[in-house]
Image 1 (tube, helix red, strand yellow):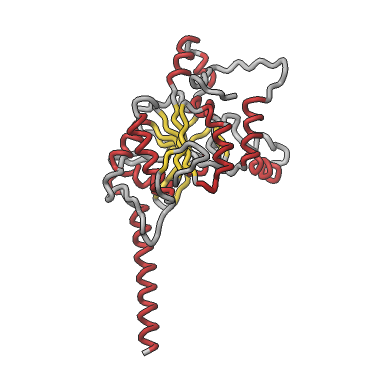
Image 2: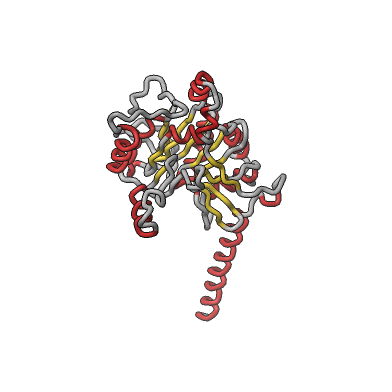
Length: 318
């Protein structure tokens, strides 16, 4: 009798594991057979300064005003110190930034998503942003509360990208057949990608909520699965030298790695001059980054950038 019970329990466990694996593999390959064309992984680069200088000054000013970025920051009450640091630092440079919380928090203004599940929070935040702001902003940037972003570098990178095309940008990672943009480095969607994504959110066969499943895939992978159904594919963002501009680590960690791997070229071996994001920062490191990026200046040096991105009206940014 004990032997039969033991065999039964083993069978149940093996069956559960098998079902979980099939479910996971099925989701990772969703949309693969529905591709309209063969898509090779792209490495998108920032525009050359020389190309920008060919444009007249008036056109450059108009370009600078035309790029409007809406920032989405999912947060949870336990991250209140990070929340405060992000609010006081780089989000001031977004044309508009809003925080989406897992529950109602009195300390900071936020939009209550009424769920602790990060994928459900992302889905609701994307739907809210698109429904309310699709006619006001052409780029939508989602980042964790541990991320520091230089929005002006993001706008410069996007300069020659048409938001009416389906862009899905950041730091890409390959997982089996699936290429996705890591949430650790921040995720950028054009308004066209937002439109396509939102058309699928109500179709569980193509963009499932996944709540209650035995085996769950991460929220950034799930986003890629949904976007594949819409014909939108992950693109890796790089500078002219091929260095990533969306970074999943902090500057300090990159420097430590460069000192070990490239001791004679620490700066060159570290990071891109046009970096858009760094991740894994503490609240104090956020403020240090703000000082280094926006406040510290060498006296007597004049910076003649090819393009100027003016701060949002009424902003108290640095």
